[in-house]
Image 1 (spheres, rainbow, N blue to C red):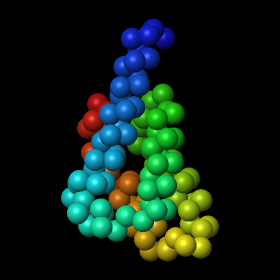
Image 2 (image 1 turned 30 degrees about the vertical axis):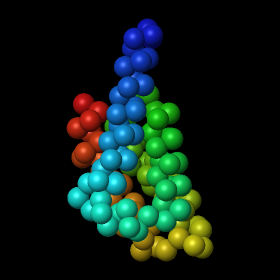
Image 3 (image 1 turned 45 degrees about the horizontal axis):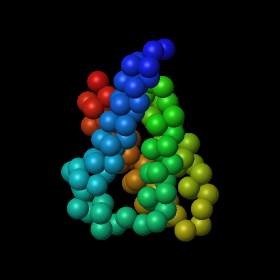
Image 4 (image 1 turned 180 degrees about the horizontal axis):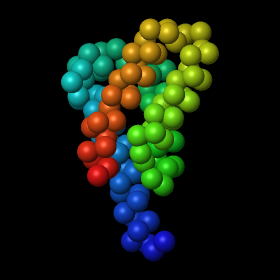
Length: 104
């Protein structure tokens, strides 16, 4: 792939990451999300963002797979509530609509 092609892919990846972060903090429930943020939620989102950045092509199936994979790891932690984790997982998956608009 050419240098320009690589730069375009990197730009698309960064746009998707930015869209995900912006949606979570400033989207429909942004004010509530900012109040509820705990350390583990930031770490979980950071891991998801890192994995998304590593992808060459971002699609719904891959994004959902990443969210599920990271969620399973956090489910094993004692300090993470199942209800809160489920809510965050649903929110991250719902963010795909917003992210997909930025990727296209």
